[in-house]
Amino acid sequence: MSRGGVPAGFEHGSSRVATREVSRPRDHSRDRLANSVFQASLFLLDAFLITAALFTAWWVPERFNLFELRFDINTSEITMATGIGVVAILVTFSLGGMYRLGRGTSRIDEFYKACVQLTLGAILGLTAAVLILGPDIVVSRRVVLLGWLLAVIAVATGRLAHGSLVGVLRSRGVAVRRLLIVGTQPTGKLLLDNIQGTPHLGYDVVGFLAHRHSQEPPREFAGLPVFGTTSRIAEVARRHEVDEIIIAPDGTTHNDLLDLVYQLMDLPVSIRIYPDTFRLMTNDELSISDLAGLPMVSVRTVGLRAWDRTLKRALDIVISAGVLIFLSPLMLLLALLVKLDSRGPVFFVQERVGHDGVPFHLLKFRSMPIGAERETGPVFARPDDPRPTRLGRFMRRYSLDELPQFINVMLGEMSVVGPRPERPHFVEQFRQTIPRYMARHREKAGITGWAQVNGLRGDTSIEERTRYDLYYVENWSPLFDIKIMIKTLIHIFRDSNAY
Image 1 (spheres, rainbow, N blue to C red):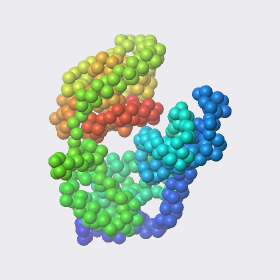
Image 2 (cartoon, rainbow, N blue to C red; image 1 turned 180 degrees about the vertical axis):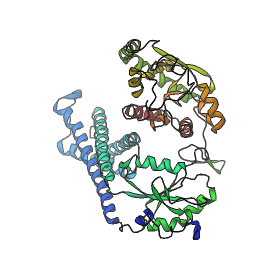
Image 3 (spheres, rainbow, N blue to C red; image 1 turned 90 degrees about the vertical axis):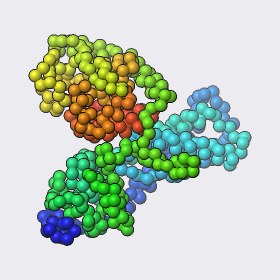
Image 4 (cartoon, one colour; image 1 turned 135 degrees about the vertical axis):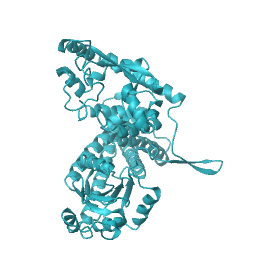
Protein backbone atom coordinates (compact mmCIF):
# COMPACT_ATOMS: atom_id res chain seq x y z
CA MET A 1 0.00 0.00 0.00
CA SER A 2 1.43 3.37 -1.01
CA ARG A 3 0.77 6.77 0.46
CA GLY A 4 -2.78 8.17 0.74
CA GLY A 5 -4.37 4.72 0.82
CA VAL A 6 -3.66 4.19 -2.90
CA PRO A 7 -2.73 0.60 -3.87
CA ALA A 8 0.75 0.07 -5.25
CA GLY A 9 0.96 0.83 -8.95
CA PHE A 10 -1.77 3.49 -8.84
CA GLU A 11 0.44 6.50 -8.21
CA HIS A 12 1.23 6.77 -11.92
CA GLY A 13 -1.31 4.21 -13.08
CA SER A 14 -1.04 0.82 -14.68
CA SER A 15 -2.96 -1.03 -17.41
CA ARG A 16 -6.17 0.93 -18.10
CA VAL A 17 -5.25 3.62 -15.62
CA ALA A 18 -2.05 4.33 -17.49
CA THR A 19 -4.01 4.85 -20.67
CA ARG A 20 -5.99 7.60 -18.94
CA GLU A 21 -2.89 9.21 -17.42
CA VAL A 22 -1.09 9.71 -20.76
CA SER A 23 -4.14 10.67 -22.81
CA ARG A 24 -3.82 13.57 -25.22
CA PRO A 25 -4.24 17.10 -23.83
CA ARG A 26 -7.79 18.22 -24.15
CA ASP A 27 -8.73 20.96 -26.59
CA HIS A 28 -10.78 23.24 -24.32
CA SER A 29 -11.11 25.92 -27.00
CA ARG A 30 -13.00 23.54 -29.26
CA ASP A 31 -15.46 22.64 -26.50
CA ARG A 32 -16.00 26.31 -25.62
CA LEU A 33 -16.55 27.15 -29.29
CA ALA A 34 -19.06 24.31 -29.70
CA ASN A 35 -21.02 25.43 -26.62
CA SER A 36 -21.02 29.03 -27.88
CA VAL A 37 -22.32 27.85 -31.27
CA PHE A 38 -25.06 25.82 -29.56
CA GLN A 39 -26.18 28.86 -27.54
CA ALA A 40 -25.96 31.33 -30.41
CA SER A 41 -27.84 29.04 -32.79
CA LEU A 42 -30.60 28.55 -30.23
CA PHE A 43 -30.87 32.32 -29.71
CA LEU A 44 -31.08 32.96 -33.47
CA LEU A 45 -33.60 30.14 -33.90
CA ASP A 46 -35.81 31.58 -31.15
CA ALA A 47 -35.56 35.06 -32.69
CA PHE A 48 -36.59 33.79 -36.14
CA LEU A 49 -39.46 31.62 -34.88
CA ILE A 50 -40.89 34.27 -32.54
CA THR A 51 -40.70 36.92 -35.28
CA ALA A 52 -42.46 34.59 -37.73
CA ALA A 53 -45.14 33.74 -35.18
CA LEU A 54 -45.89 37.38 -34.30
CA PHE A 55 -45.95 38.54 -37.94
CA THR A 56 -48.28 35.63 -38.76
CA ALA A 57 -50.59 36.66 -35.93
CA TRP A 58 -50.77 40.21 -37.39
CA TRP A 59 -51.08 39.43 -41.09
CA VAL A 60 -53.13 36.24 -41.37
CA PRO A 61 -56.29 37.63 -39.67
CA GLU A 62 -56.12 40.74 -41.85
CA ARG A 63 -55.39 38.82 -45.06
CA PHE A 64 -58.24 36.35 -44.60
CA ASN A 65 -60.55 38.65 -42.63
CA LEU A 66 -60.48 36.46 -39.54
CA PHE A 67 -62.05 37.64 -36.29
CA GLU A 68 -63.77 40.38 -38.40
CA LEU A 69 -60.87 42.69 -37.61
CA ARG A 70 -60.04 46.01 -39.25
CA PHE A 71 -56.57 47.31 -38.49
CA ASP A 72 -56.12 51.04 -38.15
CA ILE A 73 -52.32 50.88 -37.80
CA ASN A 74 -49.92 50.97 -40.72
CA THR A 75 -47.16 48.59 -41.76
CA SER A 76 -44.39 50.49 -39.98
CA GLU A 77 -46.29 50.41 -36.69
CA ILE A 78 -46.91 46.67 -37.06
CA THR A 79 -43.22 46.11 -37.77
CA MET A 80 -42.15 48.21 -34.78
CA ALA A 81 -44.67 46.54 -32.46
CA THR A 82 -43.51 43.10 -33.59
CA GLY A 83 -39.87 44.06 -33.15
CA ILE A 84 -40.55 45.34 -29.64
CA GLY A 85 -42.34 42.08 -28.81
CA VAL A 86 -39.51 39.94 -30.15
CA VAL A 87 -36.86 41.91 -28.22
CA ALA A 88 -38.92 41.78 -25.02
CA ILE A 89 -39.37 38.00 -25.27
CA LEU A 90 -35.70 37.39 -26.05
CA VAL A 91 -34.64 39.58 -23.13
CA THR A 92 -37.01 37.64 -20.88
CA PHE A 93 -35.60 34.36 -22.19
CA SER A 94 -32.05 35.51 -21.50
CA LEU A 95 -32.81 36.72 -17.98
CA GLY A 96 -34.77 33.54 -17.30
CA GLY A 97 -31.81 31.30 -18.12
CA MET A 98 -33.32 29.83 -21.28
CA TYR A 99 -29.91 29.80 -22.97
CA ARG A 100 -28.08 27.86 -20.30
CA LEU A 101 -27.93 24.54 -22.06
CA GLY A 102 -28.32 21.99 -19.30
CA ARG A 103 -27.81 18.26 -19.68
CA GLY A 104 -30.65 15.92 -18.85
CA THR A 105 -33.30 18.64 -18.53
CA SER A 106 -36.78 17.25 -19.06
CA ARG A 107 -38.36 18.38 -22.35
CA ILE A 108 -41.65 18.79 -20.51
CA ASP A 109 -40.05 21.06 -17.90
CA GLU A 110 -38.40 23.05 -20.68
CA PHE A 111 -41.74 23.45 -22.47
CA TYR A 112 -43.40 24.65 -19.28
CA LYS A 113 -40.58 27.12 -18.65
CA ALA A 114 -40.83 28.40 -22.24
CA CYS A 115 -44.58 29.01 -21.80
CA VAL A 116 -43.96 30.98 -18.61
CA GLN A 117 -41.18 33.06 -20.14
CA LEU A 118 -43.20 33.71 -23.31
CA THR A 119 -46.11 34.94 -21.21
CA LEU A 120 -43.88 37.27 -19.21
CA GLY A 121 -42.20 38.47 -22.41
CA ALA A 122 -45.55 39.13 -24.09
CA ILE A 123 -46.70 41.25 -21.14
CA LEU A 124 -43.41 43.14 -21.15
CA GLY A 125 -43.64 43.62 -24.94
CA LEU A 126 -47.20 44.96 -24.83
CA THR A 127 -46.27 47.39 -22.09
CA ALA A 128 -43.19 48.57 -23.99
CA ALA A 129 -45.17 48.93 -27.24
CA VAL A 130 -47.74 51.18 -25.57
CA LEU A 131 -45.02 53.29 -23.95
CA ILE A 132 -42.98 53.64 -27.15
CA LEU A 133 -45.69 53.85 -29.83
CA GLY A 134 -48.22 55.70 -27.71
CA PRO A 135 -51.51 54.77 -26.07
CA ASP A 136 -53.47 55.17 -29.34
CA ILE A 137 -52.15 51.91 -30.80
CA VAL A 138 -54.94 49.33 -31.04
CA VAL A 139 -53.97 45.72 -30.31
CA SER A 140 -56.65 43.04 -30.57
CA ARG A 141 -56.71 40.60 -27.69
CA ARG A 142 -57.39 37.81 -30.19
CA VAL A 143 -54.31 38.75 -32.18
CA VAL A 144 -52.20 38.77 -29.01
CA LEU A 145 -53.56 35.36 -28.00
CA LEU A 146 -52.95 33.97 -31.49
CA GLY A 147 -49.39 35.35 -31.49
CA TRP A 148 -48.69 33.82 -28.08
CA LEU A 149 -50.09 30.44 -29.16
CA LEU A 150 -48.12 30.40 -32.42
CA ALA A 151 -44.95 31.45 -30.58
CA VAL A 152 -45.39 28.65 -28.03
CA ILE A 153 -45.82 26.04 -30.78
CA ALA A 154 -42.94 27.42 -32.85
CA VAL A 155 -40.50 27.75 -29.93
CA ALA A 156 -41.38 24.32 -28.52
CA THR A 157 -40.93 22.66 -31.92
CA GLY A 158 -37.72 24.54 -32.64
CA ARG A 159 -36.18 23.77 -29.26
CA LEU A 160 -37.14 20.10 -29.56
CA ALA A 161 -35.35 19.90 -32.93
CA HIS A 162 -32.37 21.90 -31.64
CA GLY A 163 -32.07 19.75 -28.52
CA SER A 164 -32.19 16.57 -30.58
CA LEU A 165 -29.44 17.84 -32.88
CA VAL A 166 -27.26 18.92 -29.95
CA GLY A 167 -27.82 15.49 -28.36
CA VAL A 168 -26.65 13.74 -31.53
CA LEU A 169 -23.53 15.92 -31.68
CA ARG A 170 -22.75 15.35 -28.00
CA SER A 171 -23.14 11.58 -28.44
CA ARG A 172 -20.51 11.81 -31.18
CA GLY A 173 -17.98 13.56 -28.98
CA VAL A 174 -18.74 17.25 -29.55
CA ALA A 175 -18.57 19.39 -26.37
CA VAL A 176 -18.47 16.43 -24.01
CA ARG A 177 -17.96 16.86 -20.27
CA ARG A 178 -15.45 14.64 -18.52
CA LEU A 179 -17.05 13.04 -15.48
CA LEU A 180 -15.56 11.38 -12.41
CA ILE A 181 -17.77 9.23 -10.18
CA VAL A 182 -16.91 8.95 -6.49
CA GLY A 183 -18.12 5.69 -5.00
CA THR A 184 -17.40 2.07 -5.91
CA GLN A 185 -20.57 0.62 -4.46
CA PRO A 186 -23.86 -0.34 -6.22
CA THR A 187 -24.91 3.33 -6.25
CA GLY A 188 -21.84 4.20 -8.32
CA LYS A 189 -22.71 1.42 -10.77
CA LEU A 190 -26.28 2.76 -10.97
CA LEU A 191 -24.96 6.22 -11.87
CA LEU A 192 -22.67 4.79 -14.55
CA ASP A 193 -25.47 2.69 -16.08
CA ASN A 194 -27.78 5.71 -16.28
CA ILE A 195 -25.10 7.90 -17.85
CA GLN A 196 -24.02 5.26 -20.37
CA GLY A 197 -27.66 4.67 -21.25
CA THR A 198 -28.12 8.32 -22.23
CA PRO A 199 -25.22 9.16 -24.58
CA HIS A 200 -26.98 12.31 -25.81
CA LEU A 201 -26.11 13.96 -22.49
CA GLY A 202 -22.50 14.10 -23.68
CA TYR A 203 -20.62 12.70 -20.67
CA ASP A 204 -17.28 10.90 -20.87
CA VAL A 205 -16.83 8.95 -17.64
CA VAL A 206 -13.08 8.87 -17.01
CA GLY A 207 -13.31 6.49 -14.05
CA PHE A 208 -14.02 6.11 -10.36
CA LEU A 209 -12.61 7.06 -6.99
CA ALA A 210 -13.25 4.97 -3.89
CA HIS A 211 -14.17 6.64 -0.62
CA ARG A 212 -11.41 7.17 1.93
CA HIS A 213 -12.97 4.62 4.30
CA SER A 214 -12.67 1.83 1.69
CA GLN A 215 -10.31 -0.89 2.94
CA GLU A 216 -8.60 -1.65 -0.39
CA PRO A 217 -9.96 0.00 -3.55
CA PRO A 218 -10.25 -2.26 -6.57
CA ARG A 219 -8.20 -1.54 -9.67
CA GLU A 220 -11.34 -1.56 -11.80
CA PHE A 221 -15.02 -1.10 -11.17
CA ALA A 222 -17.78 -1.67 -13.73
CA GLY A 223 -15.16 -1.88 -16.47
CA LEU A 224 -13.53 1.50 -15.72
CA PRO A 225 -10.35 2.33 -13.80
CA VAL A 226 -10.39 3.26 -10.12
CA PHE A 227 -7.86 6.01 -9.40
CA GLY A 228 -7.45 5.21 -5.71
CA THR A 229 -9.32 6.94 -2.91
CA THR A 230 -10.75 10.41 -2.36
CA SER A 231 -7.59 11.47 -0.51
CA ARG A 232 -6.22 12.43 -3.96
CA ILE A 233 -9.43 13.71 -5.54
CA ALA A 234 -7.98 17.14 -6.45
CA GLU A 235 -4.95 15.56 -8.09
CA VAL A 236 -7.09 13.14 -10.13
CA ALA A 237 -9.51 15.88 -11.16
CA ARG A 238 -6.65 18.10 -12.32
CA ARG A 239 -4.70 15.36 -14.12
CA HIS A 240 -7.71 14.02 -16.01
CA GLU A 241 -9.16 17.48 -16.73
CA VAL A 242 -12.45 16.57 -15.07
CA ASP A 243 -15.38 18.95 -15.64
CA GLU A 244 -17.87 17.39 -13.27
CA ILE A 245 -17.85 15.07 -10.26
CA ILE A 246 -20.80 13.09 -8.99
CA ILE A 247 -20.48 11.77 -5.45
CA ALA A 248 -22.40 8.70 -4.32
CA PRO A 249 -22.09 9.00 -0.52
CA ASP A 250 -22.48 5.26 0.27
CA GLY A 251 -22.27 5.73 4.03
CA THR A 252 -19.87 8.68 3.96
CA THR A 253 -20.17 11.09 6.88
CA HIS A 254 -21.23 14.70 6.53
CA ASN A 255 -17.72 15.89 7.43
CA ASP A 256 -16.17 13.67 4.76
CA LEU A 257 -18.46 15.17 2.13
CA LEU A 258 -17.53 18.68 3.20
CA ASP A 259 -13.85 17.72 3.02
CA LEU A 260 -14.28 16.54 -0.58
CA VAL A 261 -15.87 19.85 -1.54
CA TYR A 262 -13.12 21.85 0.17
CA GLN A 263 -10.42 19.89 -1.69
CA LEU A 264 -11.97 20.96 -5.00
CA MET A 265 -12.64 24.61 -4.15
CA ASP A 266 -9.76 25.92 -6.30
CA LEU A 267 -10.65 23.84 -9.37
CA PRO A 268 -13.25 24.71 -12.07
CA VAL A 269 -15.20 21.51 -11.36
CA SER A 270 -18.95 21.15 -10.90
CA ILE A 271 -19.90 18.92 -7.96
CA ARG A 272 -23.13 17.04 -7.54
CA ILE A 273 -24.13 14.61 -4.80
CA TYR A 274 -26.43 11.68 -5.46
CA PRO A 275 -28.14 11.18 -2.09
CA ASP A 276 -28.32 7.88 -0.31
CA THR A 277 -31.74 6.41 -0.80
CA PHE A 278 -33.09 7.34 2.61
CA ARG A 279 -30.46 9.40 4.43
CA LEU A 280 -31.53 12.62 2.77
CA MET A 281 -35.05 13.96 2.53
CA THR A 282 -36.71 13.58 -0.83
CA ASN A 283 -37.40 17.24 -1.54
CA ASP A 284 -35.92 18.56 -4.78
CA GLU A 285 -34.47 21.53 -2.96
CA LEU A 286 -34.42 22.98 0.51
CA SER A 287 -36.63 25.99 1.08
CA ILE A 288 -35.46 28.80 3.32
CA SER A 289 -37.95 30.89 5.28
CA ASP A 290 -38.10 32.66 8.61
CA LEU A 291 -40.03 32.23 11.81
CA ALA A 292 -40.39 35.49 13.73
CA GLY A 293 -37.06 36.62 12.30
CA LEU A 294 -35.26 33.30 12.87
CA PRO A 295 -33.99 31.63 9.67
CA MET A 296 -35.49 28.20 9.04
CA VAL A 297 -34.69 25.52 6.46
CA SER A 298 -37.61 23.30 5.43
CA VAL A 299 -36.47 19.78 4.55
CA ARG A 300 -39.83 18.07 4.43
CA THR A 301 -43.38 18.97 3.57
CA VAL A 302 -46.55 17.10 4.41
CA GLY A 303 -48.32 15.65 1.35
CA LEU A 304 -51.54 16.92 -0.14
CA ARG A 305 -53.75 19.34 1.77
CA ALA A 306 -57.54 19.34 1.63
CA TRP A 307 -57.75 21.70 -1.37
CA ASP A 308 -54.99 19.77 -3.15
CA ARG A 309 -56.88 16.52 -2.70
CA THR A 310 -60.04 18.07 -4.12
CA LEU A 311 -58.16 19.39 -7.14
CA LYS A 312 -56.41 16.07 -7.71
CA ARG A 313 -59.70 14.17 -7.41
CA ALA A 314 -61.34 16.49 -9.95
CA LEU A 315 -58.45 15.90 -12.34
CA ASP A 316 -58.79 12.14 -11.82
CA ILE A 317 -62.51 12.18 -12.60
CA VAL A 318 -62.11 14.24 -15.78
CA ILE A 319 -59.25 12.13 -17.15
CA SER A 320 -60.66 8.72 -16.21
CA ALA A 321 -64.10 9.61 -17.60
CA GLY A 322 -62.49 10.76 -20.85
CA VAL A 323 -60.42 7.57 -21.16
CA LEU A 324 -63.36 5.28 -20.38
CA ILE A 325 -65.58 7.06 -22.93
CA PHE A 326 -63.15 7.52 -25.81
CA LEU A 327 -61.31 4.22 -25.41
CA SER A 328 -64.40 2.13 -24.74
CA PRO A 329 -64.33 0.61 -28.30
CA LEU A 330 -60.71 -0.49 -27.74
CA MET A 331 -61.54 -1.89 -24.30
CA LEU A 332 -64.50 -3.85 -25.70
CA LEU A 333 -62.26 -5.27 -28.43
CA LEU A 334 -59.60 -6.28 -25.89
CA ALA A 335 -62.24 -7.91 -23.70
CA LEU A 336 -63.46 -9.96 -26.66
CA LEU A 337 -59.90 -10.98 -27.62
CA VAL A 338 -59.09 -12.00 -24.04
CA LYS A 339 -62.14 -14.25 -24.02
CA LEU A 340 -61.20 -15.83 -27.34
CA ASP A 341 -57.47 -16.15 -26.55
CA SER A 342 -57.69 -18.37 -23.46
CA ARG A 343 -60.19 -19.92 -21.08
CA GLY A 344 -61.20 -17.79 -18.10
CA PRO A 345 -62.73 -14.43 -17.14
CA VAL A 346 -62.02 -11.19 -18.97
CA PHE A 347 -60.89 -9.31 -15.88
CA PHE A 348 -58.18 -10.24 -13.43
CA VAL A 349 -59.10 -9.02 -9.94
CA GLN A 350 -56.31 -8.83 -7.37
CA GLU A 351 -56.07 -7.40 -3.86
CA ARG A 352 -53.64 -4.48 -3.57
CA VAL A 353 -52.76 -2.10 -0.73
CA GLY A 354 -53.88 1.50 -1.29
CA HIS A 355 -54.37 4.78 0.55
CA ASP A 356 -53.52 4.59 4.27
CA GLY A 357 -52.73 0.88 3.88
CA VAL A 358 -56.35 -0.05 3.12
CA PRO A 359 -56.68 -3.00 0.69
CA PHE A 360 -58.79 -2.70 -2.47
CA HIS A 361 -59.47 -4.86 -5.52
CA LEU A 362 -57.47 -3.78 -8.57
CA LEU A 363 -58.85 -4.49 -12.06
CA LYS A 364 -56.82 -5.57 -15.07
CA PHE A 365 -57.46 -7.37 -18.31
CA ARG A 366 -56.40 -10.96 -17.69
CA SER A 367 -53.02 -11.55 -19.34
CA MET A 368 -52.15 -14.97 -17.86
CA PRO A 369 -53.88 -18.34 -17.65
CA ILE A 370 -55.95 -19.12 -14.57
CA GLY A 371 -53.78 -20.31 -11.67
CA ALA A 372 -50.53 -18.92 -13.09
CA GLU A 373 -49.08 -18.59 -9.56
CA ARG A 374 -50.50 -21.81 -8.15
CA GLU A 375 -47.07 -23.45 -7.93
CA THR A 376 -44.78 -20.44 -7.48
CA GLY A 377 -46.83 -18.24 -5.18
CA PRO A 378 -46.68 -14.42 -5.51
CA VAL A 379 -43.74 -13.42 -7.73
CA PHE A 380 -42.80 -10.37 -9.81
CA ALA A 381 -43.00 -10.54 -13.59
CA ARG A 382 -39.62 -10.88 -15.32
CA PRO A 383 -38.38 -10.46 -18.92
CA ASP A 384 -38.38 -14.21 -19.66
CA ASP A 385 -41.65 -14.84 -17.83
CA PRO A 386 -43.40 -17.81 -19.52
CA ARG A 387 -46.77 -17.18 -17.88
CA PRO A 388 -48.44 -14.52 -20.09
CA THR A 389 -50.63 -15.64 -22.97
CA ARG A 390 -49.87 -14.50 -26.54
CA LEU A 391 -52.36 -11.64 -26.25
CA GLY A 392 -51.32 -11.01 -22.65
CA ARG A 393 -47.69 -10.48 -23.61
CA PHE A 394 -48.75 -7.89 -26.20
CA MET A 395 -51.06 -6.10 -23.76
CA ARG A 396 -48.42 -6.01 -21.04
CA ARG A 397 -45.81 -4.68 -23.46
CA TYR A 398 -47.97 -1.60 -24.17
CA SER A 399 -49.73 -1.47 -20.75
CA LEU A 400 -53.14 -2.11 -22.35
CA ASP A 401 -53.97 -4.56 -19.56
CA GLU A 402 -53.98 -1.59 -17.15
CA LEU A 403 -56.89 0.22 -18.84
CA PRO A 404 -59.62 -1.21 -16.51
CA GLN A 405 -57.87 0.53 -13.61
CA PHE A 406 -59.51 3.76 -14.76
CA ILE A 407 -62.65 2.17 -13.28
CA ASN A 408 -60.77 2.00 -9.96
CA VAL A 409 -59.99 5.69 -10.42
CA MET A 410 -63.64 6.58 -11.04
CA LEU A 411 -64.60 4.65 -7.89
CA GLY A 412 -62.07 6.68 -5.88
CA GLU A 413 -59.90 3.67 -5.00
CA MET A 414 -56.96 4.89 -7.09
CA SER A 415 -55.61 8.01 -8.74
CA VAL A 416 -54.31 8.38 -12.29
CA VAL A 417 -50.87 9.29 -10.86
CA GLY A 418 -49.42 7.96 -7.64
CA PRO A 419 -47.25 5.20 -6.17
CA ARG A 420 -48.02 1.84 -7.80
CA PRO A 421 -49.94 -0.43 -5.40
CA GLU A 422 -48.37 -3.71 -4.31
CA ARG A 423 -49.93 -6.92 -3.06
CA PRO A 424 -50.23 -7.38 0.73
CA HIS A 425 -47.66 -10.21 0.57
CA PHE A 426 -44.97 -7.87 -0.78
CA VAL A 427 -46.01 -4.87 1.32
CA GLU A 428 -45.48 -6.91 4.47
CA GLN A 429 -41.97 -7.83 3.29
CA PHE A 430 -40.98 -4.32 2.23
CA ARG A 431 -42.26 -2.54 5.33
CA GLN A 432 -39.89 -4.62 7.46
CA THR A 433 -36.77 -4.04 5.37
CA ILE A 434 -37.15 -0.62 3.73
CA PRO A 435 -37.24 2.53 5.91
CA ARG A 436 -40.26 4.80 5.37
CA TYR A 437 -41.81 2.36 2.92
CA MET A 438 -45.31 2.79 4.36
CA ALA A 439 -45.06 6.59 3.96
CA ARG A 440 -45.77 6.08 0.24
CA HIS A 441 -49.29 5.03 1.23
CA ARG A 442 -50.13 8.52 2.50
CA GLU A 443 -51.67 9.15 -0.94
CA LYS A 444 -53.77 7.06 -3.27
CA ALA A 445 -52.08 4.48 -5.43
CA GLY A 446 -51.77 5.38 -9.12
CA ILE A 447 -52.01 3.78 -12.54
CA THR A 448 -48.68 5.41 -13.33
CA GLY A 449 -46.13 7.19 -11.18
CA TRP A 450 -42.85 9.07 -10.95
CA ALA A 451 -40.93 5.82 -10.42
CA GLN A 452 -42.49 4.16 -13.46
CA VAL A 453 -41.69 6.97 -15.92
CA ASN A 454 -38.09 6.83 -14.67
CA GLY A 455 -37.81 3.18 -15.72
CA LEU A 456 -38.52 1.63 -12.30
CA ARG A 457 -41.28 -0.87 -12.91
CA GLY A 458 -41.47 -4.64 -12.82
CA ASP A 459 -38.65 -6.48 -11.07
CA THR A 460 -36.50 -3.40 -10.34
CA SER A 461 -35.02 -1.94 -7.14
CA ILE A 462 -37.73 -1.47 -4.52
CA GLU A 463 -35.48 0.96 -2.62
CA GLU A 464 -35.17 3.21 -5.67
CA ARG A 465 -38.88 2.98 -6.45
CA THR A 466 -39.71 3.94 -2.88
CA ARG A 467 -37.41 6.96 -3.04
CA TYR A 468 -39.14 8.18 -6.21
CA ASP A 469 -42.57 7.51 -4.69
CA LEU A 470 -41.72 9.53 -1.57
CA TYR A 471 -40.42 12.35 -3.75
CA TYR A 472 -43.77 12.42 -5.57
CA VAL A 473 -45.82 12.32 -2.36
CA GLU A 474 -43.90 15.26 -0.87
CA ASN A 475 -43.68 17.36 -4.04
CA TRP A 476 -47.11 16.93 -5.64
CA SER A 477 -48.56 19.59 -7.90
CA PRO A 478 -51.05 19.53 -10.79
CA LEU A 479 -48.23 20.29 -13.23
CA PHE A 480 -46.20 17.41 -11.79
CA ASP A 481 -49.13 15.06 -12.46
CA ILE A 482 -49.51 16.35 -16.02
CA LYS A 483 -45.78 15.96 -16.59
CA ILE A 484 -45.92 12.32 -15.44
CA MET A 485 -48.93 11.62 -17.67
CA ILE A 486 -47.15 13.02 -20.73
CA LYS A 487 -43.99 11.07 -19.92
CA THR A 488 -46.11 7.94 -19.49
CA LEU A 489 -47.56 8.26 -23.00
CA ILE A 490 -44.04 8.64 -24.39
CA HIS A 491 -42.65 5.87 -22.19
CA ILE A 492 -45.23 3.26 -23.28
CA PHE A 493 -43.53 2.75 -26.64
CA ARG A 494 -39.95 2.45 -25.38
CA ASP A 495 -40.15 0.92 -21.91
CA SER A 496 -37.77 -2.05 -21.71
CA ASN A 497 -39.18 -3.02 -18.30
CA ALA A 498 -42.72 -3.61 -19.59
CA TYR A 499 -43.23 -7.39 -19.63
